[in-house]
Amino acid sequence: MVEVTSRPITMAQVARHAGVSQASVSRVLNGVSTVDPAIVAKVNRAVAELDYSPSETARSLVRGRSHTIALLVPDLENPMFQGVLKGLTVAAARDGYRVLVADSAEAVDIEADIALEARTKGDALVLVSPRMPDAVLEDLIRRAAPVVVVNRSITASGTGQLSVDYASAAKELGEHLVGFGHTRIAYIGGPAGSYANHLRLQGLADFTRAHPDVELLTITAGSSMEAGYDAADTVLETGATAAIAFNDLVALGVMSRLREVGVAVPDQLSIAGIDDIPQARFAAPPLTSMSVPRAEIGRQAWLRLRDLIDGHDAASGLFYRPTIIARDSTGPASHASGWLGPARPVLRLGSTVVAHYVDGAAVDSVLSPRPYLDAVVSRAGTPLTVTEPTDHPHHLGVSLAIADVNGTSYWGGRTFVRGEGSIMVPNHGRQRRDDLKIDDHALHERLSWVDHHGTTQLVEVREIRTAEFDGGWALSWRSHLKATLDAITFGSPASNGRPGAGYGGIFWRFAPDIARVYSPAGSTEKDVHGAATPWVAFAFPERGTTVILHQAREPLPWFVRFGEYLGAGPAVAWDAPRRLPEGGSLDLELGAFVLDSYLPGADEVEQLLPGLRARTGL
Image: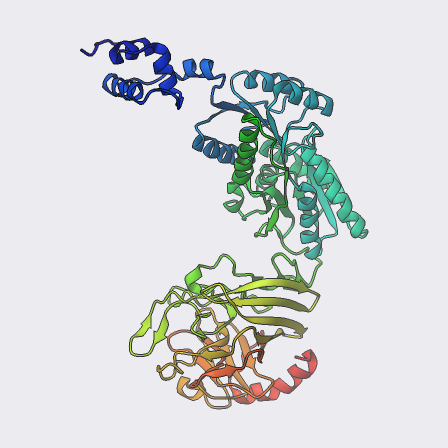
């Protein structure tokens, strides 16, 4: 008969119900393999009938383990540490462990005491960015073993170690800002006892040695948003045009104060942080930062701690190198001109940024990710491109897009299939950036065209060169495509059976506006579309702007739209496939003159073109 009680069922009751000893129940519950199967069956049946749950406290006393680990951080409000906690908690839970969290609140004097107290509640300890002196840390590790340490250099053996290369992070941010033309940069430093702050200073020292013309000014702050807010006025007093913050929280605090005093970011002050916490992406403007794999650090910390708990040596230490996430909080210095900022290139002419060059990595896969020119404007500010418009979301500003390369779409969206029409097919490739270099007047890029199976079909060397002239600016886009392992066939909807849809090549999607379009072939879409003319012009009467697209070599037919939308580009496979043998190559080009004046007809364009080419060399 089952005993009815309001108190928790005990092991003794299970033993009486099963007709065995308490020791036998304990051995069964602890998985001892030598117990008689008949006894195992009796105990398991009694456990089920009594709905018995073993006391974790009692089991811990028997086993000598609590299945709890302690984590100590200097500031739990910091999302960087929250990310590490998340990764640690999820990984430990898979092995039946829970995490007890302690926060030292940057109190260096009592940090070791807090750590020891937390360690008594669990089986092991994780220290994240400890601030205590080296000697105190070494003594703590000896007394609290097993221990894993994150973001601190230690010499104690038998301890797991994980670190972030904050030196290279700070140095790369310096390179990012000097690429935008900044030569007076402030560093808003973290807590004095922070090893990570020491690493940042070390990286910035390496950076200034490589750039003796750059003046670096160091301001002591802290690690919180409040510290950044309080330091903002001092940053402004230095006259710096850019600032690197100890972390994202400090950067966000600075930006909050800058909004209050009317300082525009990045026009008047560029600012960057470190850690790429979730709030960085949603700041106004979005914050440039160095991304750190927070959750992965927590996961790896658990794997090393688990080995130590089980009596094994911890795996070798890991050293993570952050990657730059360039966003809108950094931009060109007011005095800078030309192509700037290798991590997020922009073209600045005088006081106007006339184009952004985007790597396209964030583009949705069904839009065939690829680099593109975005936010192109005239020097007077007329918008001239649109990206991911609602009518054709696969149109990306100015980009090189081809609808069919051996069956892979590098155009995006639907694919025209003979006999079926335009349908969505899982055949979208991507153009992967392998290298990028810029100088004052040109951007040089190497790309791999990777098909929907992951195979590289083409290697591209791309150059986008620019020039200024009175009343406008010009660009020249040249791409050299080389087949890799196989012969290549370039196709289009037209070559696959859809008349007139020969698109594919360097394509310029204009912003929606009222425009006149004309070329030597005429001024209607029927005249211009498919004509292999040297140029085609888009003139915007209400904006007082004209864009002349031209081909310097033997012209390809133009794919042009200005009824449904505004867009144009030379067509690689206008009405028939174009084939390359294995190792063969194809050169594509498109030039543009962007004028802050309205040209009413073809005669005016013909008169201007020779002079524009001579003045710009494009």
